[in-house]
Image (cartoon, rainbow, N blue to C red):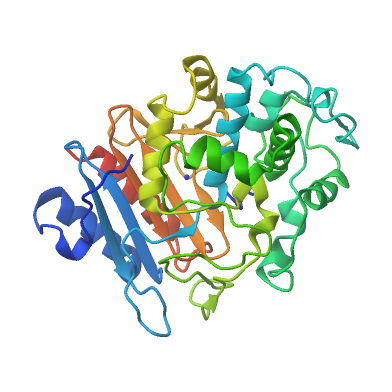
Length: 374
């Protein structure tokens, strides 16, 4: 369950209302509007970088279904599993610094941490954490109902999350399969803290966020349940057509290194583009990150998706591929993609359970369409 389970921006962005009503910009604007009128998301935001290198922003819907307030241009949202790419980037930086070996057992850095039914840290490689080939069981499936409800304001220590996972049997022996598991990235976060001797939030901030100038991206502190700065509110409905519940205020600690970040569509474009441009990793480590494995059918709505080290390669309908990740966390769904030649698109919507059938497919299609436009 990719619960926390997706990027080049620049100054001079235009809101949808200020964009020209001609050509590609008008097409993107209409696509964003359809996510509200047809897919029924309360709000939709998109940030794009076209073949001309210009960054543009679009919005539709309302930021607050009660007050009908305007959606902030490039507003902040919970980025969910896009956090995994940030975490993987820091691990790979440590590899480049000679402090971590991708093919060393996790036991080397976190002795005696991973023990359970079919689980042994002496058999799991660091690479397998980032690649989701460790076999570690998923913790979120055991708390998901609670974090949407009675545990929405519960603070979880990272070790709490790991303990939930370790009560369950391994999905498979390390290297013998592929299964998306947020547990892998909790362990990766603990590895970062052990190797650096510093908090994960500090490392993500200094090594990634500040390095490439992501002004609207941050890792919420302990007890920080709100979203700082301009943002559309987050909503959830138990089923399509059901009453919307405002879930903007949550304790996101249950996502931690796997999904706690707050960002904007524009910043996600900037991050993924900087990553692919080699501004965050040395060539050898970027090549490792981009070395992908096949994932099972059903992980994505797009055929041919492959997973690297915290980075997803998705085929485009027009040929070629985009790189990104994706994120889903109560109230928000985000989907970014960047191409080798500098095009970028990220969409964010303010619900992470579909308000209508195929609503997320429509959001994903917007990104594909923008990256494929001539």
